[in-house]
Amino acid sequence: MNYNKNGWKSFTCFFSAEYCQKYLKSHYIKGNVENPEVKSYENCYSFLYYLEHGQIYYQQAEKAPLILKPILLFYGLVHLIKACILTIDPAYPESTTVLAHGVSTRKRKKQNYLFFNDEVKIQKNGLFPYMSEKMFHMKQLEGEKIMMKDLLQLIPELDGLFLLHEDKKIFEKPKREGELFVLSDTVLDFYHMTENRFKEFIVSKVNQNVEFSGNGIRFKLQDHGASTISPLKFNLEEDDWVFPLHRNEIFTFPELLTHYLLLYNLSMIARYETEWWSELTKTMPNRDYPFIHFFLDVTLKKGPFLVYQYLTDSDS
Image 1 (cartoon, rainbow, N blue to C red):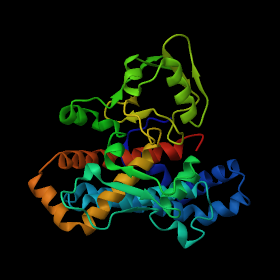
Image 2 (cartoon, helix red, strand yellow):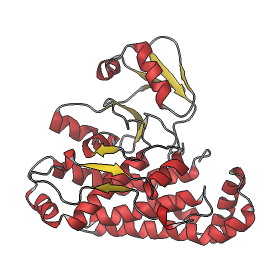
Image 3 (cartoon, rainbow, N blue to C red):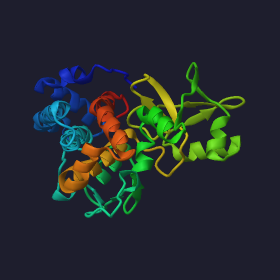
Image 4 (cartoon, helix red, strand yellow):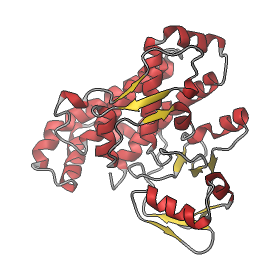
């Protein structure tokens, strides 16, 4: 995985149609796309403009007041994701079914609504299931409901906030022995598993080879980059890999999917739940506010970072 953390400067190479054409051509050849030369010429400007428009949304979000940030950040991420998809699927978008969001939320929030307890539902068609399948080879997500708290607990940079508000750690930083990641035995307590059961569980959840070595929980992944299904997450603030201590059905979700779902719901709230959203940003009544505020600050940098890792991952 490329650890480039130069923000939008990292994308400078893509703001050249000539470079984008060569870049897309190499990906299409690798993906056995028919007529890679022609397809790359046809798509180089679409690819470039998706990235450019995404950058503009993010730059405006950085300057915008909090009440507008989720909307700008969500559509910024959508544009960047479309650029990623175009590296795999030269015909995107083939139909209008892939243009919907691909996820839904309650239209009307209940009394005493808490963002932490809200959930989104995965739809059959739209960008979310399409990106899940095309970018990460994930299928059969239709109908799944995912809670916001579970998603927030998959953002490594929020670990300190969870420790302050809920007095619990949500990630452990593995020790490193060369290519090996080494977890402490306390992870087994969080997962309520024996060592052997834990190893079987991890093997069943990742989409790549995982090798355990010697005594204890020492493992090596074939790859832990942006395009893989893996429990390891990259903490951008600490510049290191961490392992989630909160076990749920989505703990191996690629982080791009997590950011998409959180931003989707927050953008819907900012657009359609004006009273609740205004009250939250003005009165800060509960833990929803600090977590939402902190997440928006994190995703401002982490979204483009994750996309850049995906675009430059040799296996993407």
